[in-house]
Image (cartoon, rainbow, N blue to C red; front, side, top):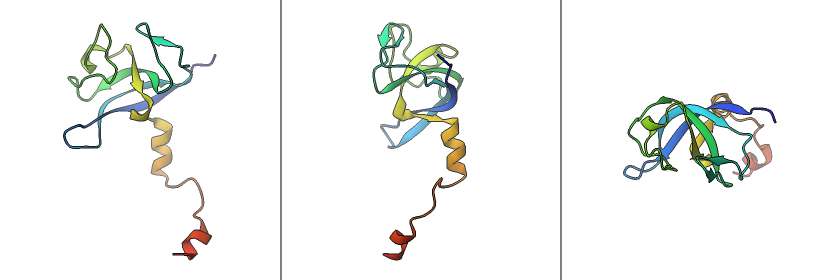
Length: 112
């Protein structure tokens, strides 16, 4: 199976101010399946395996803690599970910076 490793930004929900906060830069392993495990726990449908390469908030709690680690500084360079919805892939970032990937719907614009 090819190694579908993608550079990514890792976020956590900001429970105080709302929204999401960037807590680390890492790599997401997109070729994982729900039955793959991280620290003995199956990933499931909503998670992906990641490694953290650059911690932005070292003391931030992991979204899916393990018996070995509860915060980001404890897993730099190691594998952890992360919620897919809180992972922004590098390809998503570069595409977003170029604007929409489709032509505007002219018919919808005319009905405004």
